[in-house]
Image (cartoon, rainbow, N blue to C red; front, side, top):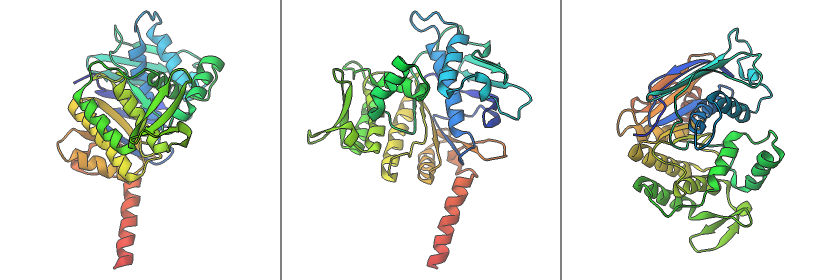
Length: 342
Protein backbone atom coordinates (compact mmCIF):
# COMPACT_ATOMS: atom_id res chain seq x y z
CA UNK A 1 0.00 0.00 0.00
CA UNK A 2 1.55 3.30 -1.11
CA UNK A 3 1.04 6.86 0.15
CA UNK A 4 -2.63 7.78 0.19
CA UNK A 5 -4.93 10.48 1.50
CA UNK A 6 -6.36 9.33 4.82
CA UNK A 7 -7.93 12.49 6.15
CA UNK A 8 -8.99 15.89 4.80
CA UNK A 9 -10.46 18.94 6.47
CA UNK A 10 -11.09 22.23 4.70
CA UNK A 11 -13.06 25.42 5.32
CA UNK A 12 -14.09 28.35 3.13
CA UNK A 13 -12.39 26.88 0.08
CA UNK A 14 -14.05 28.54 -2.91
CA UNK A 15 -17.55 27.10 -3.28
CA UNK A 16 -17.03 24.65 -0.41
CA UNK A 17 -17.68 26.18 2.99
CA UNK A 18 -16.82 23.10 5.01
CA UNK A 19 -15.72 19.52 4.37
CA UNK A 20 -14.07 16.86 6.49
CA UNK A 21 -13.57 13.19 5.76
CA UNK A 22 -11.49 10.25 6.92
CA UNK A 23 -13.12 7.34 5.09
CA UNK A 24 -11.38 7.49 1.73
CA UNK A 25 -11.14 4.40 -0.48
CA UNK A 26 -8.82 3.23 -3.25
CA UNK A 27 -11.25 4.76 -5.78
CA UNK A 28 -13.08 7.93 -4.71
CA UNK A 29 -15.88 9.34 -6.84
CA UNK A 30 -16.84 13.01 -6.41
CA UNK A 31 -20.32 13.77 -7.75
CA UNK A 32 -22.59 16.80 -7.77
CA UNK A 33 -24.28 19.38 -9.96
CA UNK A 34 -22.35 22.13 -11.73
CA UNK A 35 -21.28 24.79 -9.27
CA UNK A 36 -21.05 22.50 -6.23
CA UNK A 37 -17.24 22.55 -6.21
CA UNK A 38 -16.22 19.14 -7.61
CA UNK A 39 -13.23 20.37 -9.61
CA UNK A 40 -12.32 22.88 -6.90
CA UNK A 41 -12.09 20.04 -4.36
CA UNK A 42 -10.08 17.92 -6.77
CA UNK A 43 -7.60 20.75 -7.38
CA UNK A 44 -7.36 21.49 -3.66
CA UNK A 45 -6.32 17.90 -2.97
CA UNK A 46 -3.97 17.76 -5.95
CA UNK A 47 -2.18 21.02 -5.12
CA UNK A 48 -1.60 19.87 -1.53
CA UNK A 49 -0.33 16.41 -2.50
CA UNK A 50 1.82 17.67 -5.38
CA UNK A 51 3.37 20.34 -3.13
CA UNK A 52 4.34 17.64 -0.65
CA UNK A 53 5.97 15.70 -3.50
CA UNK A 54 7.89 18.66 -4.93
CA UNK A 55 9.13 19.77 -1.49
CA UNK A 56 12.83 18.94 -0.97
CA UNK A 57 13.00 16.92 -4.18
CA UNK A 58 16.52 16.66 -5.50
CA UNK A 59 18.40 19.93 -5.04
CA UNK A 60 15.27 22.08 -4.61
CA UNK A 61 15.91 24.35 -1.62
CA UNK A 62 12.54 26.15 -1.59
CA UNK A 63 10.58 26.13 1.65
CA UNK A 64 7.25 24.28 1.80
CA UNK A 65 5.56 27.68 1.99
CA UNK A 66 7.17 28.76 -1.29
CA UNK A 67 6.38 25.47 -3.02
CA UNK A 68 2.75 25.45 -1.87
CA UNK A 69 2.08 29.14 -2.59
CA UNK A 70 3.37 28.82 -6.15
CA UNK A 71 1.42 25.62 -6.72
CA UNK A 72 -1.83 27.16 -5.47
CA UNK A 73 -1.46 30.33 -7.56
CA UNK A 74 -0.71 28.45 -10.78
CA UNK A 75 -3.27 25.69 -10.18
CA UNK A 76 -6.16 28.05 -9.46
CA UNK A 77 -4.85 30.87 -11.71
CA UNK A 78 -5.59 33.69 -9.29
CA UNK A 79 -3.94 37.12 -9.12
CA UNK A 80 -3.90 36.83 -5.34
CA UNK A 81 -4.50 33.79 -3.13
CA UNK A 82 -7.20 35.62 -1.17
CA UNK A 83 -9.46 35.32 -4.23
CA UNK A 84 -9.82 31.61 -3.43
CA UNK A 85 -11.53 32.27 -0.09
CA UNK A 86 -15.33 31.81 0.03
CA UNK A 87 -16.72 35.30 -0.61
CA UNK A 88 -19.26 35.29 2.24
CA UNK A 89 -16.84 33.82 4.79
CA UNK A 90 -15.96 35.80 7.89
CA UNK A 91 -12.94 33.58 8.52
CA UNK A 92 -10.15 32.69 6.14
CA UNK A 93 -9.50 29.59 4.05
CA UNK A 94 -7.88 26.56 5.68
CA UNK A 95 -6.94 23.04 4.63
CA UNK A 96 -5.46 20.09 6.48
CA UNK A 97 -4.53 16.86 4.70
CA UNK A 98 -2.99 13.72 6.20
CA UNK A 99 -1.24 10.99 4.23
CA UNK A 100 -0.24 8.20 6.61
CA UNK A 101 2.11 9.76 9.17
CA UNK A 102 2.65 12.93 7.13
CA UNK A 103 0.40 15.93 7.49
CA UNK A 104 0.25 19.39 5.98
CA UNK A 105 -2.04 22.27 6.86
CA UNK A 106 -2.25 25.88 5.76
CA UNK A 107 -4.49 28.92 5.93
CA UNK A 108 -4.82 32.44 4.58
CA UNK A 109 -7.35 35.27 4.57
CA UNK A 110 -9.05 37.19 1.76
CA UNK A 111 -6.29 39.78 1.97
CA UNK A 112 -3.55 37.22 1.21
CA UNK A 113 -1.50 38.16 -1.85
CA UNK A 114 1.05 35.56 -2.91
CA UNK A 115 1.90 33.65 0.24
CA UNK A 116 -0.02 30.97 2.16
CA UNK A 117 0.54 30.61 5.88
CA UNK A 118 1.75 27.05 6.46
CA UNK A 119 0.95 25.79 9.94
CA UNK A 120 2.48 22.34 9.65
CA UNK A 121 4.38 20.38 7.03
CA UNK A 122 6.29 17.09 6.78
CA UNK A 123 10.03 17.05 7.49
CA UNK A 124 10.73 15.57 4.07
CA UNK A 125 9.02 15.36 0.69
CA UNK A 126 6.41 12.74 -0.13
CA UNK A 127 7.67 9.97 -2.47
CA UNK A 128 5.99 9.32 -5.81
CA UNK A 129 4.51 11.37 -8.62
CA UNK A 130 0.83 12.20 -8.54
CA UNK A 131 -0.98 13.33 -11.67
CA UNK A 132 -4.09 15.30 -12.59
CA UNK A 133 -5.88 14.48 -15.85
CA UNK A 134 -8.07 17.45 -16.86
CA UNK A 135 -11.42 17.13 -18.62
CA UNK A 136 -9.89 18.46 -21.87
CA UNK A 137 -7.21 16.36 -23.57
CA UNK A 138 -3.74 17.86 -23.84
CA UNK A 139 -1.93 16.05 -26.66
CA UNK A 140 -3.14 18.31 -29.48
CA UNK A 141 -2.30 21.37 -27.31
CA UNK A 142 1.04 20.01 -26.16
CA UNK A 143 3.40 22.60 -27.68
CA UNK A 144 0.97 25.45 -26.97
CA UNK A 145 0.83 24.55 -23.26
CA UNK A 146 4.62 24.34 -23.01
CA UNK A 147 5.11 27.69 -24.76
CA UNK A 148 2.43 29.35 -22.64
CA UNK A 149 4.09 28.27 -19.42
CA UNK A 150 7.80 28.07 -20.20
CA UNK A 151 8.20 30.95 -22.67
CA UNK A 152 5.31 33.37 -22.17
CA UNK A 153 4.79 32.50 -18.46
CA UNK A 154 1.16 33.56 -18.63
CA UNK A 155 -2.10 32.28 -17.19
CA UNK A 156 -4.25 30.18 -19.49
CA UNK A 157 -3.21 26.60 -18.82
CA UNK A 158 -3.04 25.88 -15.12
CA UNK A 159 -0.57 23.62 -13.32
CA UNK A 160 -2.72 20.52 -13.84
CA UNK A 161 -2.07 20.86 -17.59
CA UNK A 162 1.57 21.90 -17.25
CA UNK A 163 2.47 19.13 -14.80
CA UNK A 164 0.80 16.60 -17.07
CA UNK A 165 2.62 17.59 -20.26
CA UNK A 166 5.94 17.50 -18.40
CA UNK A 167 5.13 13.96 -17.27
CA UNK A 168 4.11 12.93 -20.78
CA UNK A 169 7.43 14.14 -22.22
CA UNK A 170 9.20 11.28 -20.42
CA UNK A 171 9.93 8.46 -22.86
CA UNK A 172 8.60 4.95 -22.16
CA UNK A 173 10.94 2.88 -20.04
CA UNK A 174 12.24 -0.59 -20.81
CA UNK A 175 13.03 -1.24 -17.18
CA UNK A 176 10.90 -2.77 -14.43
CA UNK A 177 7.17 -2.50 -14.85
CA UNK A 178 4.36 -3.59 -12.57
CA UNK A 179 2.14 -6.49 -13.62
CA UNK A 180 -0.98 -4.46 -12.86
CA UNK A 181 0.29 -1.64 -15.06
CA UNK A 182 0.96 -4.08 -17.90
CA UNK A 183 -2.53 -5.54 -17.53
CA UNK A 184 -4.01 -2.04 -17.52
CA UNK A 185 -2.11 -1.14 -20.69
CA UNK A 186 -3.64 -4.16 -22.44
CA UNK A 187 -7.10 -2.84 -21.53
CA UNK A 188 -6.15 0.61 -22.85
CA UNK A 189 -4.74 -0.82 -26.07
CA UNK A 190 -7.97 -2.69 -26.76
CA UNK A 191 -10.07 0.43 -26.15
CA UNK A 192 -8.09 2.76 -28.43
CA UNK A 193 -7.11 -0.01 -30.90
CA UNK A 194 -3.53 1.19 -31.09
CA UNK A 195 -1.19 3.63 -29.36
CA UNK A 196 0.04 7.23 -29.47
CA UNK A 197 3.68 8.15 -29.99
CA UNK A 198 5.73 11.27 -29.33
CA UNK A 199 8.47 12.48 -31.68
CA UNK A 200 11.16 14.31 -29.68
CA UNK A 201 12.61 16.05 -32.73
CA UNK A 202 9.37 17.55 -34.03
CA UNK A 203 7.69 17.79 -30.64
CA UNK A 204 4.51 16.31 -32.11
CA UNK A 205 2.25 13.41 -31.22
CA UNK A 206 0.78 10.88 -33.63
CA UNK A 207 -1.58 7.91 -33.43
CA UNK A 208 -0.69 4.49 -34.84
CA UNK A 209 -3.41 1.82 -35.11
CA UNK A 210 -2.85 -1.92 -34.92
CA UNK A 211 -2.48 -2.05 -38.73
CA UNK A 212 0.53 0.28 -38.39
CA UNK A 213 -1.34 3.13 -40.06
CA UNK A 214 -0.16 6.49 -38.72
CA UNK A 215 -2.33 9.60 -38.23
CA UNK A 216 -1.68 13.10 -36.93
CA UNK A 217 -2.94 13.65 -33.41
CA UNK A 218 -5.35 16.31 -34.71
CA UNK A 219 -7.17 13.67 -36.76
CA UNK A 220 -7.55 11.37 -33.74
CA UNK A 221 -10.69 11.28 -31.61
CA UNK A 222 -10.78 13.07 -28.26
CA UNK A 223 -11.55 9.81 -26.46
CA UNK A 224 -8.54 7.98 -27.91
CA UNK A 225 -6.23 10.84 -26.93
CA UNK A 226 -7.58 10.96 -23.39
CA UNK A 227 -7.21 7.24 -22.72
CA UNK A 228 -3.80 7.17 -24.43
CA UNK A 229 -2.54 9.61 -21.81
CA UNK A 230 -2.93 6.92 -19.15
CA UNK A 231 -1.10 4.42 -21.34
CA UNK A 232 1.88 6.78 -21.64
CA UNK A 233 2.02 7.42 -17.89
CA UNK A 234 1.89 3.71 -17.12
CA UNK A 235 4.62 3.00 -19.69
CA UNK A 236 7.16 5.72 -18.91
CA UNK A 237 7.57 5.00 -15.19
CA UNK A 238 6.13 8.33 -14.02
CA UNK A 239 3.50 6.58 -11.91
CA UNK A 240 4.40 4.17 -9.12
CA UNK A 241 2.79 2.68 -6.02
CA UNK A 242 3.06 6.03 -4.17
CA UNK A 243 1.21 8.01 -6.86
CA UNK A 244 -2.30 9.40 -6.48
CA UNK A 245 -4.31 9.89 -9.67
CA UNK A 246 -6.84 12.73 -10.02
CA UNK A 247 -9.22 12.63 -13.01
CA UNK A 248 -11.64 15.48 -13.77
CA UNK A 249 -14.86 14.45 -15.58
CA UNK A 250 -13.67 11.01 -16.59
CA UNK A 251 -16.61 10.61 -19.00
CA UNK A 252 -15.63 13.67 -21.08
CA UNK A 253 -15.27 12.75 -24.80
CA UNK A 254 -15.82 9.04 -24.08
CA UNK A 255 -18.81 6.90 -25.03
CA UNK A 256 -20.27 4.70 -22.22
CA UNK A 257 -18.46 1.52 -23.35
CA UNK A 258 -15.08 3.30 -23.34
CA UNK A 259 -15.86 4.83 -19.93
CA UNK A 260 -16.54 1.36 -18.52
CA UNK A 261 -13.29 -0.01 -19.94
CA UNK A 262 -11.39 3.01 -18.62
CA UNK A 263 -12.84 2.35 -15.17
CA UNK A 264 -11.86 -1.32 -15.47
CA UNK A 265 -8.30 -0.12 -15.97
CA UNK A 266 -8.56 2.19 -12.96
CA UNK A 267 -9.97 -0.72 -10.93
CA UNK A 268 -6.99 -2.91 -11.88
CA UNK A 269 -4.31 -0.47 -10.72
CA UNK A 270 -6.28 0.71 -7.67
CA UNK A 271 -7.14 -2.76 -6.37
CA UNK A 272 -4.01 -4.70 -7.34
CA UNK A 273 -1.45 -1.95 -6.73
CA UNK A 274 -3.19 -0.02 -3.98
CA UNK A 275 -2.99 3.28 -5.89
CA UNK A 276 -5.53 5.86 -4.81
CA UNK A 277 -7.71 7.55 -7.42
CA UNK A 278 -10.05 10.55 -7.16
CA UNK A 279 -12.56 11.05 -9.99
CA UNK A 280 -15.16 13.77 -10.60
CA UNK A 281 -18.21 13.01 -12.70
CA UNK A 282 -21.85 13.85 -13.36
CA UNK A 283 -22.48 10.72 -15.40
CA UNK A 284 -24.93 8.07 -14.26
CA UNK A 285 -22.90 5.49 -16.24
CA UNK A 286 -19.80 6.26 -14.16
CA UNK A 287 -21.68 6.05 -10.88
CA UNK A 288 -23.37 2.78 -11.82
CA UNK A 289 -20.13 1.19 -13.09
CA UNK A 290 -18.29 2.09 -9.88
CA UNK A 291 -21.15 0.68 -7.82
CA UNK A 292 -20.74 -2.62 -9.68
CA UNK A 293 -16.99 -2.52 -9.03
CA UNK A 294 -17.61 -1.73 -5.34
CA UNK A 295 -19.86 -4.75 -4.93
CA UNK A 296 -16.79 -7.02 -4.84
CA UNK A 297 -15.72 -5.87 -1.39
CA UNK A 298 -16.27 -3.03 1.11
CA UNK A 299 -13.85 -0.10 0.99
CA UNK A 300 -12.83 -0.50 -2.64
CA UNK A 301 -14.82 2.45 -4.03
CA UNK A 302 -16.32 5.36 -2.15
CA UNK A 303 -18.35 8.44 -3.06
CA UNK A 304 -18.16 12.09 -2.00
CA UNK A 305 -21.57 13.54 -2.78
CA UNK A 306 -21.91 17.33 -3.11
CA UNK A 307 -25.37 18.91 -3.02
CA UNK A 308 -26.03 22.66 -3.07
CA UNK A 309 -26.83 24.04 0.35
CA UNK A 310 -26.30 20.71 2.08
CA UNK A 311 -23.52 19.03 4.00
CA UNK A 312 -21.10 16.95 1.91
CA UNK A 313 -21.82 13.25 2.31
CA UNK A 314 -19.17 10.49 2.15
CA UNK A 315 -20.19 6.87 1.70
CA UNK A 316 -19.02 3.43 0.57
CA UNK A 317 -20.48 2.50 -2.85
CA UNK A 318 -20.52 -1.11 -1.64
CA UNK A 319 -23.63 -0.07 0.31
CA UNK A 320 -25.34 1.34 -2.81
CA UNK A 321 -25.76 4.67 -4.52
CA UNK A 322 -25.94 7.79 -2.35
CA UNK A 323 -28.66 10.41 -2.56
CA UNK A 324 -27.72 12.97 -5.17
CA UNK A 325 -29.55 15.08 -7.76
CA UNK A 326 -27.69 13.33 -10.64
CA UNK A 327 -28.90 9.92 -9.52
CA UNK A 328 -32.38 11.21 -8.70
CA UNK A 329 -32.75 12.73 -12.18
CA UNK A 330 -31.63 9.51 -13.87
CA UNK A 331 -34.09 7.45 -11.84
CA UNK A 332 -36.94 9.86 -12.63
CA UNK A 333 -36.21 9.59 -16.36
CA UNK A 334 -36.22 5.79 -16.10
CA UNK A 335 -39.53 5.84 -14.20
CA UNK A 336 -41.06 8.17 -16.81
CA UNK A 337 -39.92 5.81 -19.57
CA UNK A 338 -41.48 2.82 -17.79
CA UNK A 339 -44.73 4.72 -17.27
CA UNK A 340 -44.78 5.63 -20.97
CA UNK A 341 -44.26 2.02 -21.99
CA UNK A 342 -46.91 0.69 -19.61
